[in-house]
Image (tube, one colour):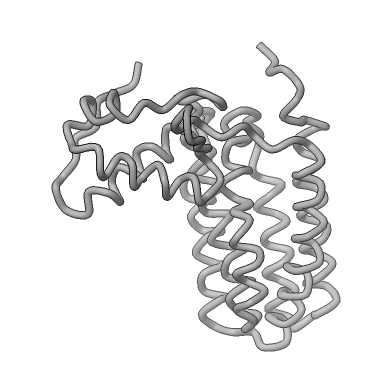
Length: 227
């Protein structure tokens, strides 16, 4: 059962966007499900404007689909081939970024990486879907720190523009798994950065991204969910 949200009147669109995103990532709204503006307006007790703007924002993030005559719906999950191409794109770009960070050892980026690891160590998933979404957000902070620390904003924007962690967050709740191996891989990346080991940092990122893909155990969006 979906609990009715209580919203303040400050930054209303941001709050509506956050609630709808949580429901999509937590699979309260299934892929392909229609998102009726009138129904959401009544539930949230707001005008249609913040609902429409929030759905438009989520559409730009790839979580919501829109069409002229059918309105808004939850975007389908990308197929296996898309995730494989995304993995290869990230290996090339984030591996290079890790090399640059190992060279510069930017203290702000390193602090963010450490904070991400500490967050997952302090509050690991406990089997609930939302826990895995939270872990995915901490993972995003870790990788974002690598991209920022590389000092190449164009590269960082290219990776961010694909919103990889939002799409992977949808899989965390669908296929929960132990995050301990991911934490070990993050520690290996951070260790190489701290040592100034450029080759090691790049290799650790590649190993992490490849292993993360294998953890999905051949899952792809076209395969029916296991019950």
